[in-house]
Amino acid sequence: MHHKLEYVSQEKTVPVSSCRAAEATKLLENIFRSVNIALVNELKQVYEAMDINVWEVIEAAKTKPFGYMPFYPGPGLGGHCIPVDPQFLAWKLRSMNYEAKFIQLADEINSGMPAYWVAKVVEALDNKAIPVDGADILVIGVSYKRDIDDTRESPALDIIDLLLRKSARVSYYDPHVPKAIVNGRQLMSLSESEWQRRLGSADCVLITTD
Image (tube, rainbow, N blue to C red):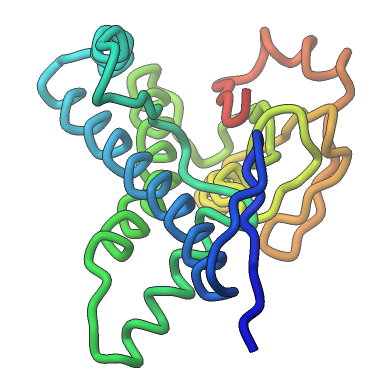
């Protein structure tokens, strides 16, 4: 018996032939974003080595009226879809003796971004002759994207964890996330007055979520 499945887009409901096609549609969307975010995350590092401002390049590139869609570098990937769902497909393909090269490379690049940004923090502190061990670091935003309370797979938590492992003194502010669990350790968000007061005294302020 044939069942008509439907994929719901923002504008209309699009019929597809099966559950497999519907799920594959979602995977395509997730993988597309994962790969393109990985591309700009890598270009951020490449262009930095070449003394080129990647943000300026992206702003110029997106003036092209066709054939280009802007993606932006950041601290890594978060949420319950983009970092996770493509890996299900990669796992399935491995069972079929097929290597999903794009998916695996994108995951490698995006998963490495928290360590990249922590290295940048250490470098910035070194330039001020401040050791990361004991440094007072204020992190702004721990949800995986702006204006929500969802911290699933948030790269901000990975950044905080890496900084804590380097014995930095880390506090955070996120009005949507009053408490966060970092590697089994519970942290509480500063209040609005507290984080504003800390801006002038912290050794480093790291904006991880808009």
